Image (cartoon, rainbow, N blue to C red; front, side, top):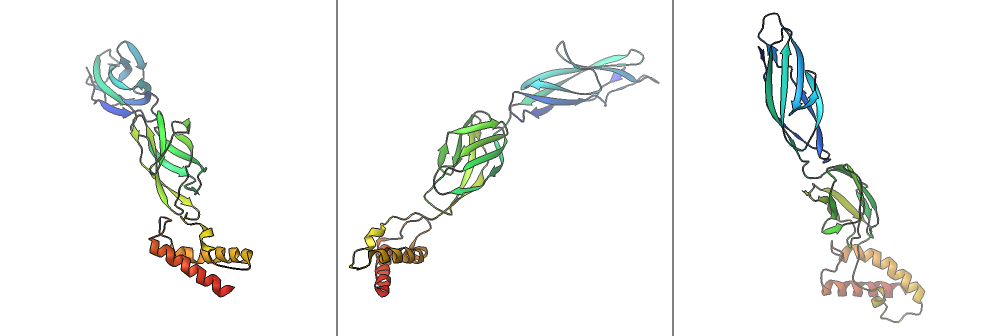
Length: 241
């Protein structure tokens, strides 16, 4: 009689489309009849024939499937084997890459995210900001426009949120000058006969002093620091008059 060796196994619906291509192998089956060989293989689920070859591929929907394999040798001896194949729903979304991985401080950068499991997309996170205006190109690619940021040179983590959960993250860098919270007009509180020249000098001094007095977040460390910068800027302007 034929003898069949095999085990049940699990596959994952990698593209989250509700089904998956399953590969099966009945080559470990053999007959105990001397001089005989196996000549027939029939894979079934219930009464439905899935394949009729020793090694085969067929599509199964997500869920549990009781699959049988009927084998028969050249003398007509036969046997039947049953196995369970589990097709699991696709897991969490996965990001493989984002392009570009940097953009302007004001936002508006079109970002392409490549990966898998991009079905039921709810939003894309740029750090603490969630963007809901997402274009789903396919289960493996989405496009989104980056939101603005107030901190130049900062890095945020980008992740995709679907109805199954949140993906891994990739780094996105904001480029541009850091914002500050004082008005240049505040520096013009002394008399000067050449306003245009003073405005140009302020711009020059501002750039020089900016890197020394601005905190990493783009805000002043304290009122004392702010006052120090204003005083330093006035001294610089007075020396150039």
